[in-house]
Amino acid sequence: MKINEVTFESVCMAGKVTFTLMIPGEKKDSYPVLWIGGPGHHKEWFEHTHIAEYADKYGIAVVEADSSESWGGRDIEEGHYLFESYFTKELRDYVMKLIPMSEDVKEHYITGWSRAGYLALRIGLAHPDLYGTVLCNSGGNVDAYGLYKDIGSMFPGLLERMFDGISTAGEFESSPFHMENIVENMVKSNAVFPRLIFHCGIDDPLARIPNVRLSEKMKVWGVPHTLCMVEGSHTWECIDISIKNALELVMDEKKEKRDGKE
Image (cartoon, rainbow, N blue to C red; front, side, top):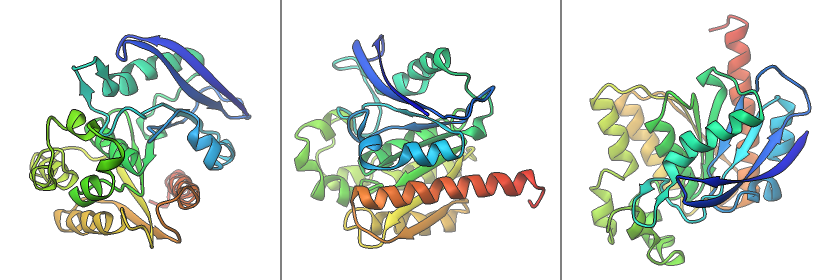
């Protein structure tokens, strides 16, 4: 495999951006791609998990972007921080120049954990034409409790900038940014859903309750998804287990369909 840091001038981000690209050792005519949205700098998944090993095993290319200045991955005109446009269009187009990417949406996966679990879920739901599967890991801010009580003080001003001035849990709870509201509105409008796979640590104080609650509501709404509870808390160790399990599940499902079992 090859792991490279790539820097280019981004129009959407109004400056230089750097991302990490992992190309599997097995040469292919086109590669499935796992798009990682953080939650921090562009190398952290490669530093804290065995993502390169797991993806290489299945012949999946990996692209990890830097989302350290984002939360929900939204385009913010103030400061010209157009992360969603960068991640879904500009970055994608740039990577396409470097490797032959699969044209099958089912072979494009988006992931992240903690606040980037929310980012991956929100962007994945908004762009089912780009991502066939969302792998949401320990999405600690899919509800207002995790968003404000436990995490808000770590990033002063970031939440208000990313969520249009919302400054209380109550305001977020009833806003169109709340994940339960996003999913419910999609159900009401008969929107297309990507494959949804959630992983969360059994002892995760931030993500367990909101993930279970969202899962239960999606069952009521008839939204197909998988929620896997794994050993661990809100840690990189838990994320390593989660992404390993998630990729195994994705590949098993792919094999079953290929073998005609579904």
